[in-house]
Amino acid sequence: MPIKKKSDLSADLFLAYGMGFRFLCQVYLEVPSEKFIEEIFRNNLFFEWPVAENQKNVSRGLKILQDYSGRWQSGLLAALKQDYTRLFIGLEKILAPPYASVYLSEDHLLYGSPVLDVRQFYKKFGLSVNPMNRVPDDHIGFELYCLSFLLENAVQAALREFLSIHLNTWLPSFLPLVEKKAETDYYRGLALLTLGFVESLSNSMDIE
Image 1: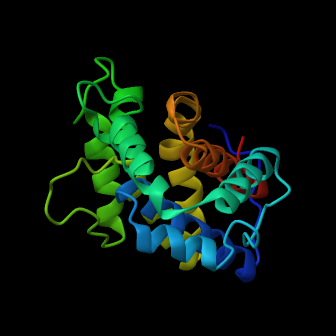
Image 2: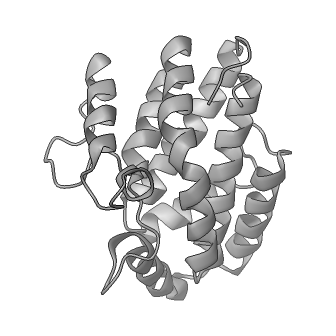
């Protein structure tokens, strides 16, 4: 994606976006637990989102998640775990593969060239996101973790590169697929929230 011009974010905005993406990386990497979900709702995270709450997709996602939080009870946890498995791990087929290679490589398979590309990017900043090497490095959770790291450390040039060359090349295909295939409002809302949050950050930095 071409970069129109440089646009510096304030330190407060860097931290706010960083906090948001650090949360979002967890929801894609981890099977939901009752403790995690109830902590989110107890702390009113979706009612007090740190930044960009008026962005179109962020607003839509937050509304869905706010409504879901009002209906939450522990008996819904099994449906959340099932939805996570269907979407991101798969029973017979992964419905929304959370790996860049699936969307960017010619054969649409795991462990394509995007894995090596993003691994080299992580190494430049000493990031070891996948020490057990059990999940490809281009998993959305790892890429969002890298994004939060760059934001929290205000590494602007690398942030621009990572958004332009990595995240913005495949998330616009992946996240609408999550929204479409999800059976729970939790994951529908998270897909919209993530998409809007990335769009908001890119717009704030004048990245088209």
